[in-house]
Image 1: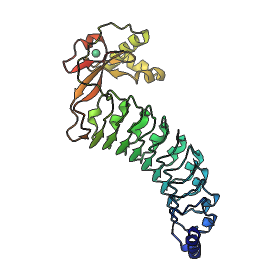
Image 2 (image 1 turned 90 degrees about the vertical axis):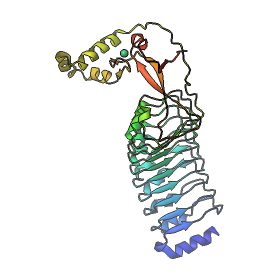
Image 3 (image 1 turned 180 degrees about the vertical axis):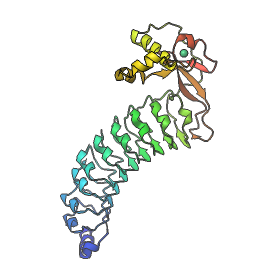
Image 4 (image 1 turned 90 degrees about the horizontal axis):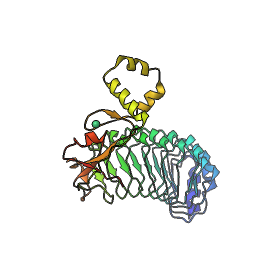
Length: 347
Ligand SMILES: [Zn+2]
């Protein structure tokens, strides 16, 4: 049956644009493909294909390739020849390796679907897929994503549900066009504060992670849908903070002094700091006290403020109050906090 269809396609020769051989129990890709150089769409889903054949290198005009539900073990380097490819479906295979070289030629790819595979990592070269708008890697075994993935500045939807991701790169805010971020059922404990800068984000799904608290300014996100059930979120219950006085390191004391003086435009320090890029770099990591507004570097007290979720957000039913992280410079400021700030007991 499959052969008949292919023979018919071959008779069409160069004029053949679409081939669909769905569910034909094929055990290999037809090598005759190399003659169909004008092919635009090739659908080979639901077969038993274990390998991409070298003949695909002739398909330089192919825009859609569907190899979903086959037996592939890798995203092979042969993909680099598919220079016109826009949509690549590789879901439901046994892919555990993603050849970096595959990214070299896929300059026009907009959609990549790798759902239901066995990937443990994604190559850094993914950043070469510059036109990518939709990337879906649900149900794999990713423990992390490379920071280079955040350089895909056209990405509007990123699906990473059901993996083992522990943290997100802080470069996440480079994904300026990101509208949908799916991170359900991972092992994320902390969301980077940079996530609050994703101005176009409309859907965030972090259900089933181990998040207790959200970064400051999380409320600024212009979400429409927010799912967070199945996280051990802090509840609004007063926690007694142990009142103790931390001993600051010399670096912390000096940093705080320098930052205070810089904020006051101390002319000598403002001039001097220009000659010390390393120090500027260290100080750039400073954070601001929510009470007194002064800066600190490595020592702070973590508190939680509960705010109602934004009224425009469509949210998980169980969420009444959003726990937001608030950082405070010292116990002195902690004792001056308002009644809406709760200390977090350090266990
Ligand atoms: Zn303070």
